Length: 322
Length: 303
Image 1 (tube, rainbow over the protein chains, first blue to last red):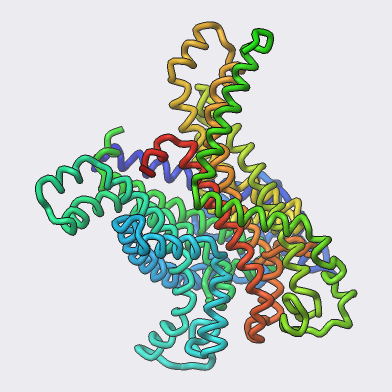
Image 2: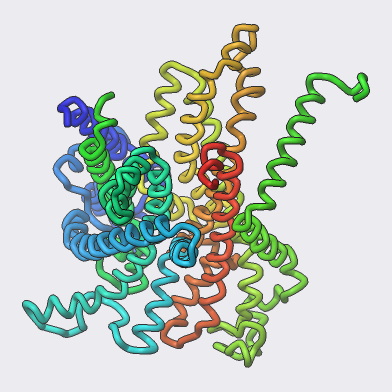
């Protein structure tokens, strides 16, 4: 990959990040009135206390001063204090990030594997029962609200059958450590991970199917067959690797979006990640927390978009040249 | 043909009518597209007939104190009641109206913004066009759901705000699609010839660019509606929907909060989810059928 392509993409991503940081400030300041007044409604505050609270939440001074201070603090990864818990937003986000990354990572991996396999089967056996069945299945999971699918799985496998816990990340009061703790967490993660896997697999399957169908019309496949290669070899060595290209970039891009897309699913299963943090921050609303989460979610999308671009440049020589 | 009726405009209209009739003839042969259309017609009819086939009074808890709570469909046909004794069937039917309204209205906003931005960014050159393009790319990477959540939380819950929020967060993909199409269109020979004959930008956009991108906009519209409906569902589920109007998303929110899951009250949360699925599949089928018919490159693939 040329250095020019690399640096161009990184610079564009940094510019986007700068835009998001500024946008984030104005989005929250445009409508915010006086949170100190509404938070401490009914309490007798002296003007001095009021001022002190404003300073604590960074709400004193003109909008310009606030903006400069916001930029300085954001550069130091200081995202302010939560109205609800009065804890630094950044440390709460850091603490809650791991459960989400684990959940989203596992689900993305499985949805990618199964989505691609389903897409290959459907495209290769085009217009057979296998194609109609798998394409129908993909369409169905794609069109369900993901949290509704989660509710269905929850009621069947946790409430009715009792195979899995109904929520949380560990058994309450459990003091297990080591392998036992890991097993307990995996047991809790199964249903939310299954939900997200099913919810995202449909899109990958449909994209893989249409990409492979496009590839199958290429001349080099006709040539490969004319050479006398077996069907399986044509598929696995010539068609699939080329058809994978758009799916791989889609997966990288989606990974950034899935981080924030798990909000409703995490809520259903009380999975203590960033999604549940968002849901809880909405009551109130806890604006510094929402602002911090919004920044983190946007940064994730920008980062994985960059990864997708670089991956594409690495995998497909045609896009490297401007 | 008699000579009186022949004017450039009438010729153009005849041509358009013929093209439309041809497209419909092709669409009728497209089985998945027709299935989608059929499902959609049924659901829209149900939403329009809501006052006839259900009792609006059953939606308010003040009117339902005499009803049993958590009644199963067999105890309180056709779909049972919720924790407040309200009819699930009435909520389902009236909720269809709000879900469809939000989906269609939000899509309309998104498509109008996206088309205007896309045509402007693709047709004109210069600083303004470059800025528009940058803006589109920036908005493409802002995660849609958190932005919608933040906007809805700031603006406050009402049907109008939900429509606005989904509309102004969904336009960038349309803008990008339209811009790419306009970029290739404006290099075509007939556009160049028209410009050489002295046509103004307005004439070029109105007569050549817009009519040629409109099929793509139409296909994109039908593919945006399901996304908008799913977004409404998620926002309503997170408690950001209009608290006074039933929608499918709000039904799921209330069912979840009322503990329908632990009570195994499947009749409460199954219908809205199935309704959403049906609408989303219907629009997706219609959209991809339109795409295949209107986009010659895809039509070829069907052979």
